[in-house]
Amino acid sequence: MDRFFLLPDQWDENPTLRGGEAHHCFKVMRKQVGDNIVIFDGNGKEANATIRAISKNEACLEIIDTRRFSALLPQLEVAVGIPKGKSFDLILQKAAEMGVNRIQPLVSDQGNVRFKTGEALAKREKWQRTLLEACKQCGQNHLPEVMVPALLDNYLENIEPGGTRIVGALTSETKTLKELLDRLEAPDRVVLMVGPEGDFSAGEYKRIFESSFAPVSLGELVLRTETAVIWMAAAVRFQFQS
Image (cartoon, rainbow, N blue to C red; front, side, top):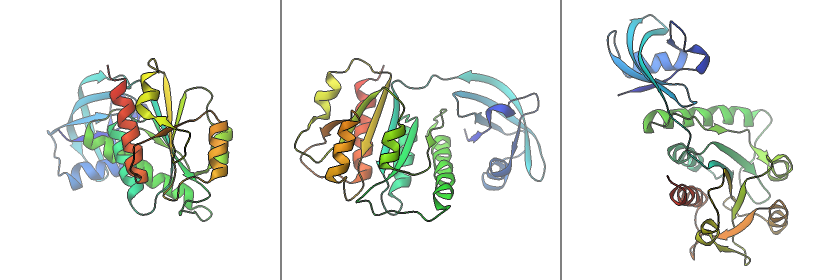
């Protein structure tokens, strides 16, 4: 059944799709009065609903039943050097599918992506829409948050305390990701970091290690940024699946 997003504060006696979601409902998906749809709030709540009225810019709904879904554990954060082109969209799509809670785009020394003044906020809004569309398609009821792109050093200075921190590293002082995960006992939060296409510089690796990120190898081959993110996130979810 087709899914649509309704903000948590709009689940009242007269729930109504507006704006882009209303347009998608009856202009793109061609829904009509009497059709059944699914709505979700991005915080784990989902409901079956019936369209009871359609106007120019709104679709008024009647909620039939409601259910709530718990977020996957551990909480999963991904900090990643921004790749060129549409590869970051792929990262966002797969992050939603694997229950990633937060994505932090990183600007680093050897990355090829830079932003002009004001461009970073516009990018963040576009990326958040990509996450929403991914959640609608895959059935994810917890909407991940993508942050405004940040310089690596600023991220390291302001990172939330605690959590198991892991960085995919092309350095000599690594163990395999499997070795590290096998030693963990169901952590509450895991932070994964992956460098840009040009990798982190030696100085950046030093600061990353000083911030308690454990370096791991992802195998003998050099993976693209998007592949490394998917590989690591999938490994964590597999390791701690209930």
